[in-house]
Image (cartoon, rainbow, N blue to C red; front, top):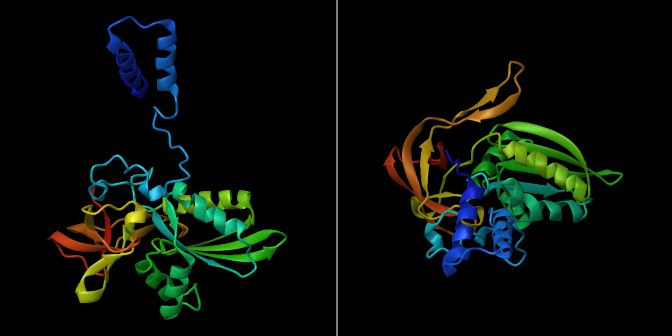
Amino acid sequence: MIKFNSRTLLLSGALAAFGLSGCALTDTEAKQAMDIVDSPTALNTPQAEWDTPFWERGNRAAADERQAPSFTRRDAPLANVAIVLDDGIDDTLPEALVARASEHGMLVLPKGMVQDALTHTPGCDDLAGEACRSALAVYPGARLVVKIDAAGGGQAAVRVWDTALNKELEERVGNNDQGAARLLESLGSQVAAAEWSMRPFVGEGDALYIAAGRVHGLAEGTELDVREPGRAVRTPTGQVVAWRAGEVIGKARVAEWVGATLSRVEPVSGTAPTPTHRLSLAP
């Protein structure tokens, strides 16, 4: 029995393309076919596209990009990360985080948006306060809140609050590209500990919104599960290691994008979503 895999199918396509002339393949043509199959492009390996914003890649060939999901490598929208910087931190670490966050399933929220949210959210003079983190999880929808302080000797002290798992982590990294790579891996692993979800909030006209949209890869028309809040999974020592999503009690959908990082949602069936629920991707 022939076992089909991606290489077999690609090779078949390449051979068919070269065989359209109706003649047998020469040695040169056969080698060209193999080169096509073995190339990163043929195997759909992500390639750098410096002139195209990451959220627009993959949709250029679509007839209607507003109908086509453009989710990330984990088939989920990017998770929001709110970063608060100490004045002593230079641009090396934050710029590297912003540039490469999408590779790890995250979107670093604009500095102005984060600062505005902190200014207008009661209790956010102390990021460690649970009320502040809970509010930031709703808007600007921060899954992770990251505080980076200068620690001397070219080091940065990092505190991370996971608003879904209600968990705090601390780390010390170099204020350089290597430190950024290490921190991105750590943050990406933390994001992966719980599936993507958003808490809706009531906006103008009693409409419901979530702090995710086009730049996250969340397409208009995407169906969402309306879930009960869910709960953390703890080890016998009390360590939070994962998240169990709540029961599905209804369906909603992304009705329209409202700006780059905001979407209006509307109920479809079952229990209508409220700010006490979580919205996650429907399977």
